[in-house]
Structures are given as C-alpha cells and as structure tokens.
Length: 452
Image (cartoon, rainbow, N blue to C red; front, top):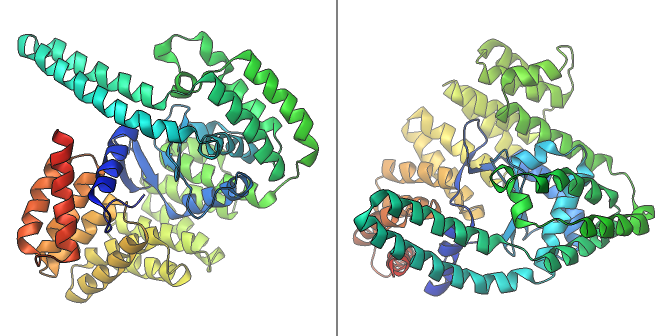
C-alpha cells in the first residue's frame, strides 16, 4: 500500500485507517526486543518471497504485489488485512517444522484474498470505525465520572472492534481450506502440511479464551474442518514434490529469526562450534553479537562474507553488526558491497544510508541522502528509513522535507496528531503547490478527518 504518493485524499484517509485498524505496528530493522512491530529484513523478506511465490501464482495472485510480512509476536497467528499483504507472527514461523507448513498458512490466507472475503471486510472496516468512535465516546462519558472505568471501556471497545474486523466465519474458513489445498496441489506442495498446521491449533480450543493464541479466536476450528482437509490432502497428495530451494530459504528465515529473537545461548547450544555452513556462521555471528562478544561476532561474520562473497545479505549483516558496534568505516564498506550486489533492494539501501550518516561528514551526508531517497522510492513504508531520511534532509538544510518526512513517519505509526504538527510546519516551508506541499496538505486533511 502506498499512502503518501499523489492520490485522491479519500484514498489516503482509507489507507491510514487501514494501518490503524490492522495492527498499530511499528517498523524497524531486525533486532531483538522489538515487540509487536513489523520485522523488516531484506534476507528474510527475500526468503518469504521465494517461499510464497509458487502458492501465490497458483492462487492467481501476483507475487510482485502480495507481500508476506512478519509481526514480532510469539503467539501463533496469521491474517490478511488488505489484498496486498499477508501478516504472519514470528511465533508461528518458529513453530513450523518444514517449509510446507508455512506454505500451507500462506495458501490459506491467500485464499481469503482470492475468494473475495476481503471485499466484505472493507465494508466492515467502515462499520468498525464507526463502532470504534462510538465506543470511544461512551468511554469518555464514563471516564468523566470514573476514570478507571472509562479506561476499561475504551480498551474493551477497541478490542471488540479489532476482533470484529478480523473475525472469520466458519463458512469462509472452510472455503479457504479447500482453496488452499488446490493451490498447494497446483504448486506441487504437500497438502498434508495443512492438516499438520490445523492439528497444532487443535488443542487450543480446549483452553480458556485468555490462554488461546489469536489464530484460534480469529480462525474458528472444528473437527469437520480438519476431516475435510484430511480428505483434500489425500486427494491431492500425489501432486506433491520436494523443493530443496524453498526448504533452504525456510531454514535461513527460521535461523535468522531465532538468532535475533531467542537468547544467544539457545542458538549457540544448537549450532556446532565447528559447523562452517553459511547458516551456522550467520547464526553464530548474530548470537555472539548479542551476547555481546565482539571478537567472535566479527570472526564469524567475516568468515561468512568471505565464504559468500557474492551474497548481498552476508555483507548487509556484516554492515549491521559493525554499525551497531560503532565501527562506522567498516560498516559503510560492507553495506556498500551489499548495494553493489543488490542495487535496488530498499532495506539494504536504507542500511547503507544509515551507516553513511553515522560518519557525520559532508560527503557521507550527501551520499546518505541519495541512498535514502532511492530506498524511499522503492519502499515508502519504512519509518526507520524515514527517520534517517529526515535527518539527512535536515543536514542538507532542507527543513521543509525534513518536517514532511517526519510527519509521514508519525502517520505510519498511527500518531496522526504528531504527524499533523510536523505537516503544518512542512506546509509553511515547502513551495506552495509543489508535490511535497500537497503531501503535507493530505496529511493535515487525514488527521482532521480521523477526528470526526
């Protein structure tokens, strides 16, 4: 979704509302302790594209348009909120035992898109917004007499809206199951993996609602669904074939996630010290970086870069580790090599720009602005990049664009009040009638609209 390119104002407002209703998410590079945010990592997103592409093609969807994104949440859940994004919790990815299980999850969510279930959901979004505003009004009235009760009502009303928006009917789930089995069969993926995924959640229904994972509450399970899926899996199983490339990407995605999200000791206990495979070197580099043990972290990441000299993600990770250890010159060189190998990867460009800014030199600032602007053209929905871009604009003396970029970053985080403050500041600094000035106007309009 592109929120801040030239577009009619109503579309922009709808996009902003979609962001606010879907997750209240923050964005950032892959790192530990980024709870309840989107995890953005070039290698992981490449792996998810490779894993999901056969399924999306089989579903009649474009892998270039539909992105699979990870939410840093240990619970087991997956959902769609618009026709172009499938969200999967990291807890679910780490629970999967083989790539086919993750592909089964993606196939099921892709079916909700292909089957038109989101069309009705878009209509429900408008009703959800009305219900949210009504609930907020009631909570404010109650809060005047009893602040504690008012706060409870506000939280409860928002949770009710969220569950209403994401709730799926049993009929939708059954239809998505059958479609998912067909997509997997067309893609040559073992459909019995879908049964394995359903069985993971089978015991959840016996738990109290407070202990259930979100998937169970938003994707109602029944024995009939599992039996129907078993029948579909048996019918389509002969079409299955192994895909070593997809499995390799899955191992890389799981390995990198676990290295960043789980305790370093957990990773080091599971990787043999003499294992020099690319996956093992990557995991050890991250684990030692997080301990922290600079010597061993540098040794492993340098060994990975030497073993995979033409792998942009190895050099990107090397750049990240050196940058976070304040070794700015080495970080710039590592990110620069990654950019040479993947010149159009926006997340790598963003890291390159960040490392150049860290040099704090006139030439570094100029090159950083170029890299960050190029990153923004390819991925405008990365608030961490926008923060760095605003800093680059400010260092270049372009305070109007710095304020506008800051406003956009706040808007993506759901902080429209703060966004409006910076947008108004940008409006007064940018040339009247220019495209950036119009974007500032759109931001102000969006903030005013959501107040009503």
